[in-house]
Image (cartoon, rainbow, N blue to C red):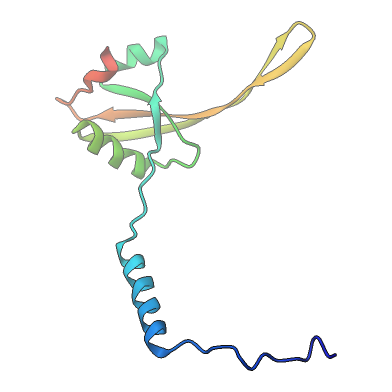
Length: 127
């Protein structure tokens, strides 16, 4: 009647061949797995000031909160086939919005100003 102390003698031990096969499958899966690099660019940031900056070879992007300058620079160079001169980043604060007696917040976000080398242009931003 010892429920906890009773051992099952009929348990089958896995053979060595099946252990090797399972180990080979795991190593094959690890070798073939490659993480997808997530995009830090959310899109172009459209405003009057951003439109004026386009004339000076500067483009404004809305980026993810975990974006950094080097990763953003590499991604812009790959996506648009341009050379990046410098990147400036800033966080915008959330803003309070009142509708009648109800208050709420407009969420903050991170944006980046990308300055390109002379002679390079991003045509999608001018449309």
